[in-house]
Image (cartoon, rainbow, N blue to C red):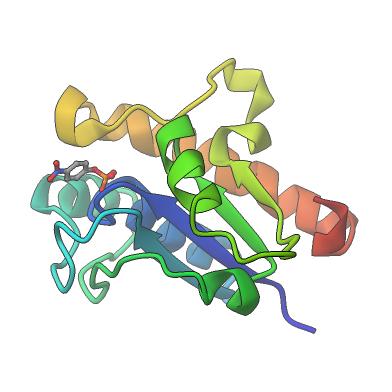
Length: 153
Ligand code: 4NP
């Protein structure tokens, strides 16, 4: 079965669409999506500065549109990755009773970076720094996927 991975941040206009686009560049065969814990930007394309920074790395985010994460996502995806602890808390609050879908931090897949979250570039304005971290974690995730099934997360 195809591995289905959902990337989650707060607004779904900076970090998680970047993670989705980066991962799609590495593994176009997987089912990938992104969502936000908030409904603040539902229907909006990724934030312009993030689109620009991603485009400079050959990643086109322009077709993506923000949506809010929902309880059904726990059934529709095999692995859900948050960008920081606030995202993880928002996700856990939505988890359906009895559901065991793994929810992890994106940075877990780039331990060599020594970061426990992807800083929000909407506030830090460091879009390239966020992309560096997201790119490293996407590579780490791709390597993990080569090693075994998503149940191993
Ligand atoms: P994201 O960044 O969670 O990486 O998409 C944000 C984008 C917008 C806002 C917050 C975070 N906002 O407050 O509108």
